[in-house]
Length: 548
Image (cartoon, rainbow, N blue to C red; front, top):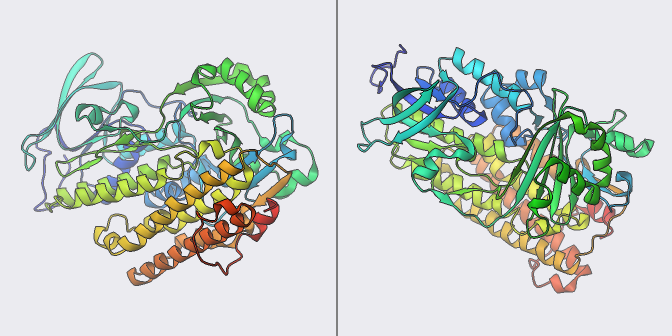
């Protein structure tokens, strides 16, 4: 039986009692168990998972691509850097291709990076990572119950001392558990969301299909022109990126996995493309022959190597509440999910799990969470709602490289200068500090609202894409290198506040530079542009490449 520190709550008196029950042993649940045990090793944790371990390495889940917050969480917070380096692939950023249907990929527009950015990212085999986590959390003391499913949940009525009760079944035998904390990490089954009627529609409707092939699909091999091949160095490395093929109302992802398989997906606006045209592998391949024929041609020789296929409506999911002072919480897709376009899924696991771990350890140390839980709820949903702006009504723009090449700079800059900075500095769990930045955070959001609207209005005037054979190297944009490189700096509170205030000005300057340049070409947009003058010339290379 685990020992607890003097004066702390101990609910380990009986075998069917524990501090924390986590429903779901996928990435969200396993990382939460690891993080909680790293922070408070004596915590008793039981994980109830429907599948068996080990799971297939190329596991049938969205979320193989990490960006900076998620990568930092896995590598640094959870101390998995060696495992990620040894067993997974480094990620050469996000890469975007635009071309006409009858053109080879080299004749279109490419936006990406020639070198790795300072803050790392990874392409992860979800199954391989989850198998490793399942093994390690058990060694750390967690009880992993597999081949089981939850039948009923009874939340505690006396929220101060009573326990939650979970009834589950394993091998046709009924069991029950009592716990102080109940965490829903069950993915889209969302036990707590359904029980408490927490589901909330969000104004972003997208559908998706995805599948995996037991074959390497390397974009670098689609063209043998030396100049095109060497844009990412002497050794072709595009395949290490999360590659996006874009058209009006859709995008296709191509993600390499270290097991040798490739993850592919098509995400689309249902107003422009219909799920019944893509909801089987043969249909998806036929759709690709029309919209991305070069990709389809590369997949066709590997049709017999299909590992899995999934089609899903309404990928984006909202939730009214994800943390409660009554000692329950939701994490991962059991709570919220936005859009895989910028690979934010593991980011929200990172942020949510870090807040849940803080709530659990604070409570088990006999300190109140009455105000902490709603504060975390407010911070988390503020981040979620602000991120939503990057996707809402944006899919019609996806086929236009002139707009998207600048939108990428904007979205990256906002992400690195705001949520990523605060996460790297471990400040998202300090409500008082976040409150001290409230004016600056509101300014960031207002700028983002205005800029995303500007992109939409620009598209209304230029809905015919101008696609040239050009490469926009994001490593040539100094502000992106600066903001990304600064993430790993350690700052005291005063210096961090100054950095955040400076970042607001950087973002404002970017908006002025974009809107003033584009309104010269489209005077109708002048009314949407922020008044003022930007003395910086940060984006000249992008403007030149896009003939703006």
